[in-house]
Length: 340
Image 1: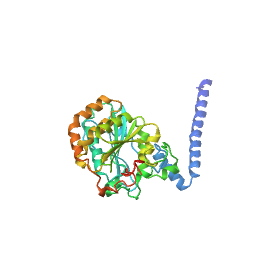
Image 2: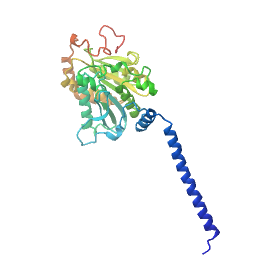
Image 3: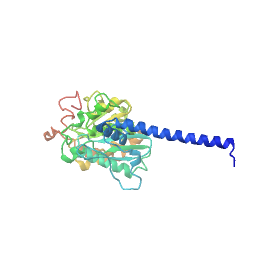
Image 4: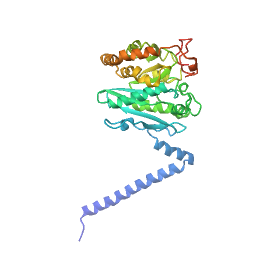
């Protein structure tokens, strides 16, 4: 049967289109193959690593999972999530609760070998998990400790012999070149990535200090909250970043300009088992930004019992702790800088 001119024209168009698509894919494949084959073996390997770690655009940085996807659900047992590892393979553990409102990133002691601060951080994580229904509007991500190497080895340095709280970017940098990233310890890289991912309104560092009276260091924007808590606890207060050395977590975070920073320094002579009872209410109040009434309620819940217990531990410094946090503790003979 004779075919119409329209049918022949449509078939011709389909055939030409098919050739064009085939050429397009083959051509692209050829170009990709040509581009890939021009790379050295090392460059190709690095390119593959970059693709696998594209969220942070750097193959040498530890991959941090999206915290929002790994929150401890209500009603399920509490657990720590391994979100990265140190160079020695020790887990960097986080716990997250809440899904909105004021966001806080809590960092357990950078010093690692700091059992009081780490126990307090652990108790905080479990409390928030168990009470997340009644802690509405409090969104927290808690890093158990930035130095799990030190925690395991009972040292203040990591497994590479590095003291982490000297090695943060010195000017609050939010983005670093690959060359700069490679010079940082993996733990510091991890915290920078976690901060960039979470965009916290506040960063809280929990640690101990040799100051027997305790201390709060605070950046602009959180002074009302911190000074209220400092007065309540009888702690001294310092200002960030001017009272700290460059290269510390406190200096870097306070200079970022996109969040407030509070470091709470618990007296080192506190017993780990007593830390939550003595200071848990204060930590919780630091999570309630701008809500003075809520902080007052938290304060009144435990004020009498905690005050009595805190007074028991207000003792002079013990010389055996002179080396504790030697690079970032308050110098009892000088108020010029908090962290050295």
